[in-house]
View 1 (tube, protein in one colour):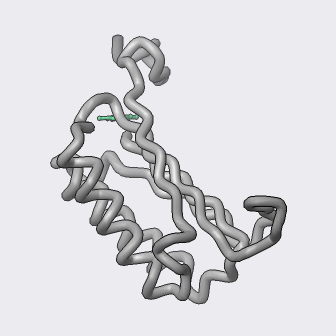
View 2: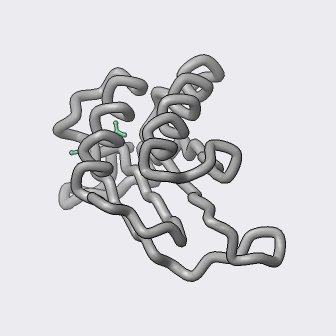
View 3: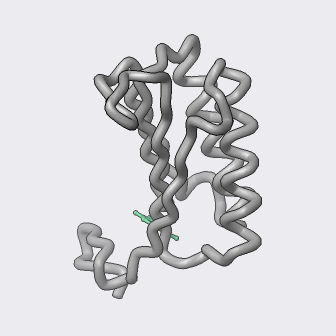
Amino acid sequence: MPAVLLETNAEISDPNLLGQELSKAVAKGLSKPEKYVTVSIRSSQTMIRAGNPSIFAFIEIRSIGGFSLPVNNTLSTTICEILSTYGLLKSNIDVNFMDISPENWGKHHGTFG
Ligand SMILES: O=C(O)c1cc2cc(O)c(O)cc2[nH]1
């Protein structure tokens, strides 16, 4: 399932709501069913950026395919928009897109490869 891993030193007022918003946005952005999307949020973490503990968020999206320049641009913009409603500055958010090969995604039956 596409996985969304969010780390931030911000305090998130309603992490479950944020998780649901991210889940929908990533499912739509990747054109994959939301039932395959997992979101993990780590807020109030110790994070240092440019040598300072300024408020920041780092998001990693892992998926078996589905990425492209237009998809990533839209996802990045949408995610920054969502996080800005939780008080994060859009300029203080980084998003990484990790295209995982099927053989590198394990499951009880082995891998998706
Ligand atoms: O990235 C995907 O499309 C993907 C990953 C993944 C993992 C999983 O456990 C599933 O059941 C489906 C699936 N799709």
